[in-house]
Length: 359
Image 1 (cartoon, rainbow, N blue to C red):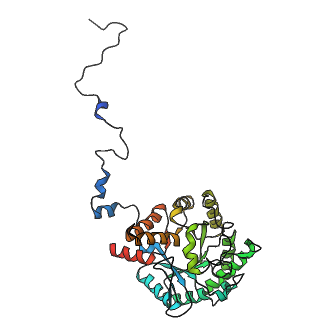
Image 2 (image 1 turned 180 degrees about the vertical axis):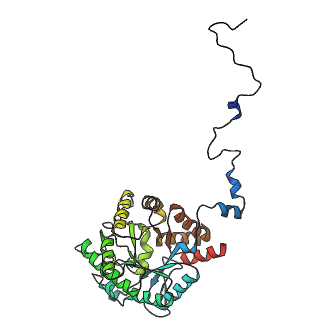
Image 3 (image 1 turned 90 degrees about the vertical axis):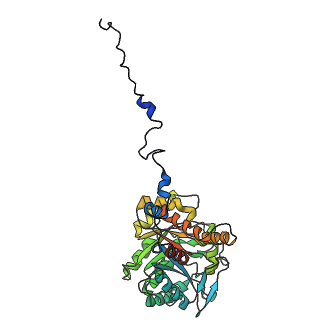
C-alpha cells in the first residue's frame, strides 16, 4: 500500500543521538573548556617564558641623572629615597654603570645654583653651563652612550616655569626663541637627543629648523608631546630646585588630565613638525594614552615613569605593603604591554640589575 496523498513521509528512525545533544557549548575559534585549558601554558617557568607576549630588557630603559656642581659630591633627595644629585665626576661614573648594565641612554636634569637663575633663564643659553659640561664629560668617557637633554627653562628661572613669564602669563612665541638657542647649545656640546618638555605650541618645528640651520641634522628630537599637568611631579621639582620657586601652576600649557583626544592632536602636530619620537608623561596613570598614540601613529613612543610614581612604589615597599622588586618590574612591564618602546625611569639601574639576575 503506497503513501497517502498529501501526507508527508515519516523520518527514518535512528538509534544515534542528535548531534545537538553532543555539543554542550557553541564552538569557539579560541577553544573552549575542557579541551582548552589556558593554565597548561603557565605550568613551568620555561613554558611561561616561551609564550610571553612582551619582553622587558635593560635596552628598554632610559636612566635620568640629576647633575650638580662640585667634585666627588652627592646629595640625597628626601622625596625620592635612593635617588641622588651627582657632581660631574659622579655623573660620569653613573654613565659608565649604565653602559655596563646595557642601558642605552641617560637623560640629564640640572640642579642650577640659585645665583645663576633669572627671570628669563638665560643660563640655559650658556655653552659652558652645567648641562653642557656634563654632556661633554659623558661623551668623552662613554662615546657610545646616548645622551638626552631636556629643553625647558624651569631649572633656570626664578619663577620655576618652563617659559618666559610676563604679568602672570607664559609667553609662547617668545619662549620658543629661547628654546631654539638652548637646543643648539646642547647639540654643540654633543647631545644626541633634544627633548623639549616645555609644552609650548609650535616649538618642535622651530627647534628642528634651528638644529638643521646649525648643521645638526642628525640630532633627534624626543618631544614631550602629551605632558599632563599632573600631581605626580612634586619630587622631581624638589630634585631640580624649582618647587619652592614655582608661582602658580602649569595648567595653561600642560594638558588637562581629563583629555585624551587632545593628546592625539598634540602628537599629530609634533610628528608633523619633525619629532622623531614622542613622550607620554606621566606614565602609569596614562597608559591609555600610550596605547592610543602607538596604535594611531606607529612612531617610537616613550613613557616617563615620573618621580611621584617612583616615590609611591618606594614608600609602599618601605612599609612592607608591597614587594619592591616585583612591583618595579611589573610596573615597567605595564609600559611595554601598553605599547611603549622605551621607559624613562628612576628605577633604571635597579631594574637592569634585576633583569640581569633573572635572565
